[in-house]
Image 1 (cartoon, rainbow, N blue to C red):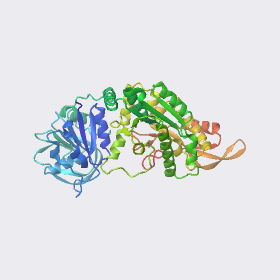
Image 2 (tube, rainbow, N blue to C red):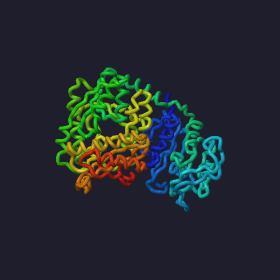
Image 3 (cartoon, rainbow, N blue to C red):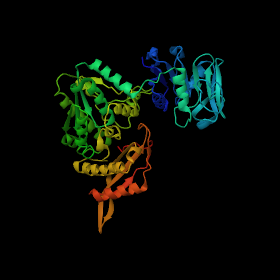
Image 4 (spheres, helix red, strand yellow):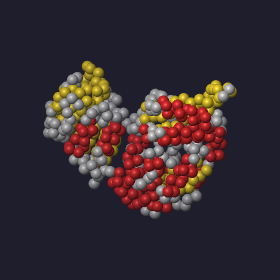
Length: 509
């Protein structure tokens, strides 16, 4: 039986980071919101982590969980989770007299045989809270402090229950990974057997059992998630998987042909559908971003549905859904406020009466890539930057037509190829070009020009939830600008986007 760690989410921005740290130790974990904790089958877990929270335990409607449901499972409370443990057991939590945000150093440690094993005095930890524990319950004992926080960590005297008022999951906590490993491996006894190979093998066997001789239809995008999901399903049912790759006229230069070729090399049963004219017709006259997204999504569903109906007796819809999508949909606060609608195959199951198949819905993006590597999927696919479903449709600001798409395809190709040629591609999480709805004055030779402006964008990120702009060499940017203006007719100005997410988004629409 697979060793599993349960993470109870109280709404912290760092909860996914906790899960990633656990997964890095080759231990499987699941995140469940605190208000759904009573529905979790606890007999399948070997330990529990209580997350942080933007809330205060002093609030009347503070997030809460009944501790007795966890029985004798080892517990680790992080920040809010630690304060909740202390308060519920009769301790005292109060507003902090000092600001407790940012780096602090552990200046006293005890009981270094379990949770704090190999954690050193003077080690930097990351604080992020406005409350603090001022009095521990009698059942607890203090095991670490900082200059401003007498109770930086504590333990239950005769049970495997611990609390820490800092965040070991963030990289700023120097020995945070060691502390998490101590809890997961030493205290919970996890075997560290959950590997990409193990996942791939067990998933293929489960798919064989679930699907039998059933047929599956799946829309492919050329991206990492859908590609890895398709190969897993293919290894389980072979030609009973029918893949559809739609050319919406908004792909990158030569992408339709190149992706189809790579899929055929993988042995996938894939059909390419040229639907460019349908998408261009639907987008005619549309300028508002949401209207464009909805039009692209609607036509994709229509095309996909038409092609899928040509397959007899199909019962399942395969999707490349990954774990962050699942977490978002069942989060503490429900689905987040929509900043932009996402183009996916959403709505198809209901319309087509298909059961949904999501073999990657327990994995993070980096884990998907590792599984893909075990399946011998090409590095070209696995290392590909994320690319939005609506493609260049949300990188052309304002109205869309074939001429604008052609301009942006050329610009984008020069930029992406330049990143690859100069060894910068893998230093960037996502990159692309935007065609702006403005023209600017320029001079070429002795002639005045009035032509298009394009913006280049390159960001670094872990999961796309936050991102920072990449510090690409000025010399490189200069060469890209020169190449683009000289080679792409209709462009006379290139700018570089140096905004971070938040407050900006990665895409412009």
